[in-house]
Image 1 (tube, helix red, strand yellow):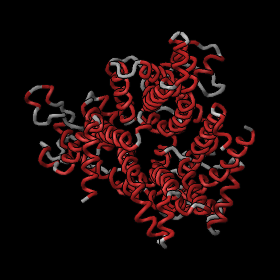
Image 2 (cartoon, chains in turn red, green; image 1 turned 45 degrees about the vertical axis):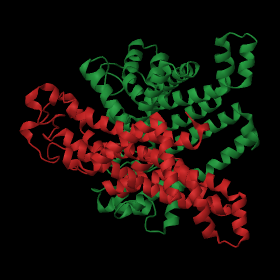
Image 3 (cartoon, chains in turn cyan, red; image 1 turned 90 degrees about the vertical axis):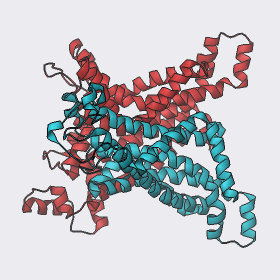
Image 4 (spheres, helix red, strand yellow; image 1 turned 135 degrees about the vertical axis):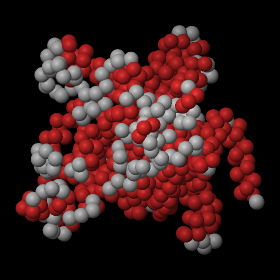
Length: 289
Length: 334
């Protein structure tokens, strides 16, 4: 019961932060679209008709209302593909970040709690992963695994693991030294019990913040991989993949096939960043940007 | 300070070993016979066997790593499958293009990011502050490749103001000395090439520089706000120092520490962003080389390029850390 109250309290505080509220609303809209794309999409996202390629959207006049945001190089409805792509992009973001959060928390808790050589070894591994720019590491992993959406999720999950491990480790280092942990130990609690019941819950607030910001980064990276042709495979509707082959669309004057998928990515990432920033302010006002 | 630098240098060695191990394992994780992977799909049987012998691919894994590492340390990154040329040579040929683009993007990001951040902090909660921070938030949320495409659409295709691909127009000749075209044009007093190279740098530079610019603006603002609230600034104002001096001499100097750190970190990240920017603007740099190598499954080229970029990244981070310790003496004694 108490946890429900504290979640409600946190939400109430979050809603007072206007930026975070905007982020929450944007995210809510995206989640709704991801859950019910068929309610909103005017057309079949996969249906192609070469006779209708690169048709402009509603701005060109009433007779173009059938494809509100125009069509792409295969005559597919851009709006419907964006709406269905929401599902893919959010899913990639959430799964990739779940991987990095699970791995990162595991490594961070072990490293921070036990210290010594465990910490030494794990943190050197983290240092090595930090030695690659994130998209380069993702591309490198994709080069080894081969293209595909599932592999992109794994690659991005690995890329974001070191950051999460460091965050969890730094919180663990602080909690470990607190008196109530010492009291637990004096009572004979096992390491596993102390970590699971006392340290892990205390690491959750920063983990939630970094996971939220991580989903934003993961969506961007997944879109980048899709754009490079290494992520989602055609004809699946995915925001990044919709942008690969943009050069052709741009030189054909079909700006709508490029502009709108990018706007969808940007708005989603913006919403997550707003929410993440808001939560961070709530947890630690000193970090306010 | 010397001790700090030495210690920091020593820390870099295991990281570089780790990096080499990751790059080495990429080929081993790739599906198929590693000798075939290194020789390319269409290689002859003899060539595949030659690869097996050359890289010791029939020996245990740790021996293979040893052979590979000792060759890499001697500058042998193998031959590109696509071009049959030494990978190190190809990587070095392309690096100046990436370096030039990154430097231009960084200058753009630093100048505009710091200016926006300072103005925002000085006029906190003003309309400018509000717009700048909303802009910065959009800046960190925009996909870099999409921004590049949009810039290309507006300034390249619709308005036809700026070139959208390559580093120079085909008709322009330039004797290359350093590989940084702006510098080469200056050295050879070639005004026409300088203007042309600069025009080619504008759009990719803005695309690549926007995210760092947004981050620098945010960091500058928050660092400045923190300093401005401190007592010594109030003292400066109380003793009648002009506001301009208070802000630019005293406040900014103290706010620089976190700003420099962010700039250093961002410069390293630019190398990642360059991969996408170069792909869009047909920029003949390392990023595009890496992507092309991935498309062609040219594993020696992938290994070489990734290893090179990661090493540059590590060095940039090292320099940032040392610079940070230099301007912030507290860090040295930890």
